[in-house]
Length: 217
Image (cartoon, rainbow, N blue to C red):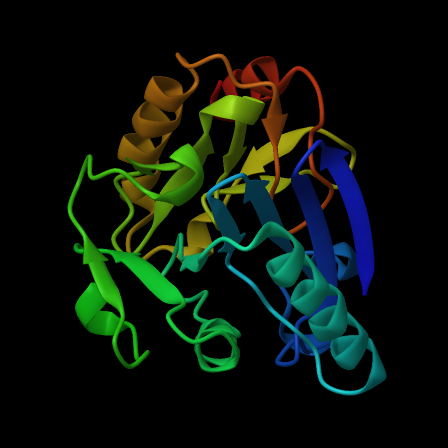
């Protein structure tokens, strides 16, 4: 596990995906690790697409999170950007009584977490986060205005040589779906995006808007 402070109250951690197999990966080995986000505000602790590994590293993570939850004294929420990113959502919910798992209504029926909360488009979220559409079924982007940061799930990846890239066409049911996804990313890039905290590959920590536009050019 690698933990990185991005900004005051904003952290990113990476862990190896438990199902990753090099012979099955169409990309390179840098995509083995998945990125997750911790956002802290005075009235909320928000985990976006959290994955906690088993063993000593996972125990250390839970102890650190316990301390943060006790220190802040605010409700814990899990936000999912993708129906494929359920990851450790149920474990967080089970550890912290009252923790909410918030899922966009468009794909909430495809997420198996007891007691999840469906989020309608435009509904307010903890920590001031917003879900933005991507035109890909089962996928949204999380926008954190206070940090000028997006968490794009799987529609945008870190490029092997640096910067960003669109998801591979082979991840889509139809390659033609890339066009609407490009349009959605262009719409998102109209916001003052500075950082892009990807789930796969290296994040972009400055010049995020330009990197997004380059990825869809």
